[in-house]
Amino acid sequence: MRRPIDGLVALEAVGALATLILLCLSVGLGQPAFFTVPIIAAVTSWIGCLVFARFLGRWT
Amino acid sequence: MQAADLAVDVLLALGVAAELLCVAGVLVMRTTLDRLHYVAACTTVPAFLILAAVLVREHLTAAGMQAIATVGLLFLLNPGLVIATARAARRVDDPDFEA
Image 1 (cartoon, rainbow over the protein chains, first blue to last red):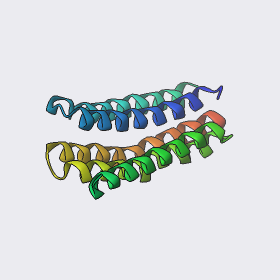
Image 2 (cartoon, each protein chain N blue to C red):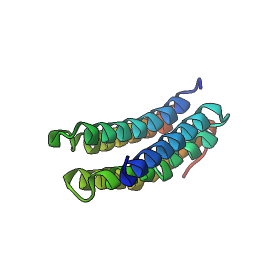
Image 3 (spheres, each protein chain N blue to C red):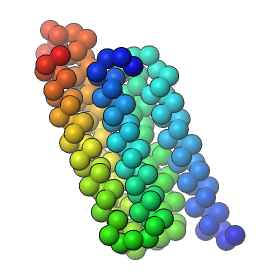
């Protein structure tokens, strides 16, 4: 994985994994305040990766 | 150990194993588009196995509903991201590509 686009692919995988890990943690810890964290992580990770994809597609 | 606890453990183990399989695919595959197939798979079967484990434990409480929302968001949003990344990868490989 040496090209920037491969790094973006890895970032997408990490974003999905981190969201699922946060989901499991929020359920396991049982704090109601933590329940929104995985949703926010999913949306922000999606937006970030989409911006990177557009950037790499246009300027590389 | 009750049957519900056993079901949660089995579903969670299956979900983690499937996620590990997807990550191994991302690491092992050679081309960007091959890797993207495994990234797309990350948010389908493994995510729903983990959601099933959460729902068996929490039922339709606030935690269960939030888990449904999270996995639903992942499942619906990720294909768009994979398509955008595939188009960017194609454009990187072939600068004359217009789509």
